[in-house]
Image 1: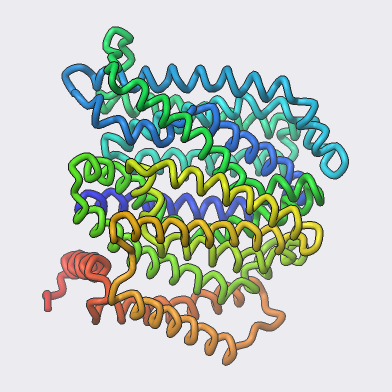
Image 2 (image 1 turned 30 degrees about the vertical axis):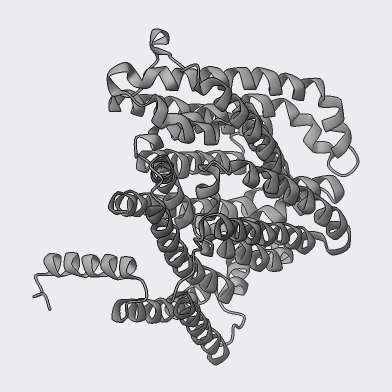
Length: 509
């Protein structure tokens, strides 16, 4: 777990710098320089490309992690597994990209009534899909070598910095809208080139076709697994992306634009989970291979508790100050319609984090079919819920429908792991973690009551948020440091305090 903590800590720091930059884009530059319809166009096109890229990978997003131990051989360049994966991805791109092109009339027909402007830019989807596919494969390869920090730097900072430049250039009249969209493709292309360069400097960019060797016994296993991954990919697309796509289909691009900003705020809390799961997935694969169930249970419990605490603290901070957030946003009165989206999505992501590594354990196990069948089923549930709730409740209906699918999915996964392995993510400290989060929320609510928001200047609003958040975080940190609620977080706080003492020359206590 030490390697997980070190890499995850560094990656989390980078990720939150990227989140800050993303927040600046989505919560300031976008509302200032783009209207909701333009934001909705970008969100729709990028959402379709991200969804299509899942299919074009032909299951590689999970198959690479699952089967890498069987190819692992440094002297033989891991038996050409990287080039083999790139070849599979290329075949998937030709297959599903060609299918998407053939069905372009259906795509355009879906959005002709409520989002006709999006049909002018469908040409952007295929090149963006191919670049995202390459990015994902190269990132997975770096992750298999237990390196995620540079991945995070490029994904979280390069892409968002590029988007900042493009938005400012568009806002000041230096770029047209078409050039803005092509510029987004350009930033993904730069990311792919830099990832390849990084792997080359690491000495693991193995592209010798003569090294490719896939053992005969593995071939049918890989094919069956990848087919299941494609089915699961359909479920992921429906469960994770359907809300934004259906908003554009059923209501229009303006609603999609407003929803995307609120959705971003709600998903901020899951940033630590992304870093942990990237590294833990590789360790879980090795634990399954050696049938080390004790390690699986330990990783599962540690991840659940720490993610519950950190994600819960972020959710409390976000929801306590959600009104101030919209007050600080340019044209915030327009985007305040998405306030309840923040809560629904935030609760869903926190619940997902609090359930530990359910998905990672099942996906890397012999029982992966259960996970994929459940994803597909719950994706259909999400589609049905969104179809019924969006026309009636609009933005909030989309968020609630997606939240319902996530809650059901985690319940099924948790029950399945208990039935098969008798492991579950909750322990004696879970109630203590919940009590601490309730206490911090109570403090935040009391501070809001004592200093109710008024018609203040942006600087006064920001100052009020900062000092109230400081008191809330202070309570959270002091309790964690004074108790054994989370040994991992307490150890991290001790190390941070020792570092501060060394820097200031203060004696250790």
